[in-house]
Length: 202
Ligand SMILES: [Zn+2]
Image (cartoon, rainbow, N blue to C red; front, side, top):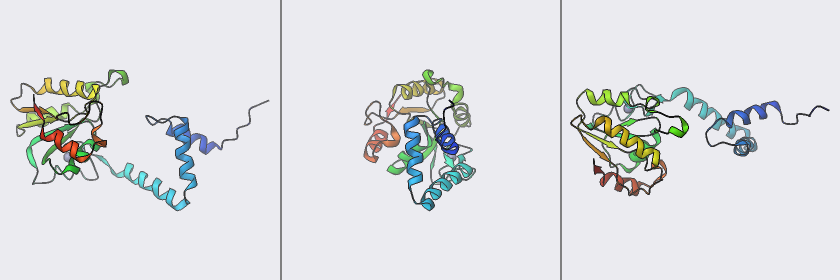
């Protein structure tokens, strides 16, 4: 006897698509859809249409890679920022976390990830060439490596450091007010401020 398919086809398809997101298993995918379906329909549609709009309108800044709706992000187009310093982060959300502290006045560069041999992420997958291009233009005096204090983040910082060390600029690494293994984007403002303040010249 053929197995009867009880799960509506659309639910099945939605769950399978959500399971393609890193960290999403069948249960979390089911829970996500279940939560959406149990909301008042207008609220659920608002969430989904906002996500859709975000996906349609946001793209990486042409200069630094921060998510923006414009060609250049709000930081690259701000004349008041210190254009001689670049803070290198893994993801846009790391830069947004640093911005929340209000302590940093320079520019950013978003690598778009971290070196991870296990996940097959190599230097070619990261925005490293564009970082070198920015530095070769000659206006940059300091680079702060603010990748996360994890094994992959450290390896990434070391890799970038080795590419930059002979370029005649100051290179520093954020200090470990952050516990090893912590993620920048979820650290509190005080901890991030301290990590920037006590950065270590490499
Ligand atoms: Zn930018």
